Length: 381
Image 1 (cartoon, rainbow, N blue to C red):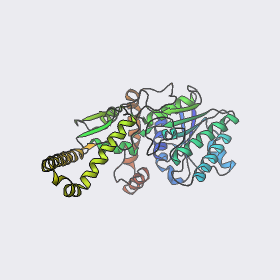
Image 2 (image 1 turned 45 degrees about the vertical axis):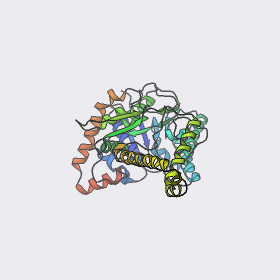
Image 3 (image 1 turned 90 degrees about the vertical axis):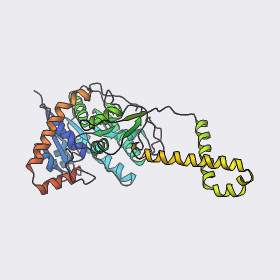
């Protein structure tokens, strides 16, 4: 059996850590976690994964980190900073990983669907010509850099644009589990496919790349076939918990309809804001109109208060992208609804063993490292 050596740059992050654990479940894969500091590899070492510590500062160190890797996966990123600083980080890491890995090695740059260019005011799932955030701009820069250098060096380069990543260690999964177990009586999501991806499928995609089952290029990495939002929520629901899930139609109204509705709303807001002025100078001259207007006002106010009371029990996620993301999908991706249960159980067992073996102080350190929210409970519970 041929063993494929997979080097994971940035393996200490939430996604990198869990992908390493899923790759460990494949008997023909040797996983090497590449981290910047010794403490970053603690969890992975305890789970039996080989860890290499270092940066791509010199040629010798770069060759030591990736010189024997058949596949190099680059999860490294700088979440904040100046654009030039972030681009320089990507340029340095990508160039070193490509140059000092073996000539036959395949390189996978981990990007996200944000590279399509969405922003706060540009929420549709589509490819925007202009990126509307620094994050989107820098990810696009890194993608171009990786593909360009790969072509110059005659190496196979892949770009994985990940959707919302779910898994045993992922913050979005923890949030979803808390959401469906919470106080809301109704959850309202757009009636479009979700753009979720599980760590199981990311690991599966890496194995497919190592086995030459995929061709180089840019891939939109979401579950395929896609999960509906309803399926995602039901997956995390506690046993016996009944969820009322409303899928909101996403038909877009025409621009003139939006303008008319906006003008109506603005007029009503002005009338309510200056009602005393209107009553004092206009309505008292027409008593019947004053009574009619007052009745309409109180009915509107009552409906508004009732609606506000109901709304506190309805959850609508902010900034959920509507539509289907474009881009090429992996040919060998399996239906995660069916295939991920067995390997997820294996990874859960690894984490449970780790949790039972460490001391209480080490538990706190591990939890704080894995959870950006600094939760005090293990994320895999």
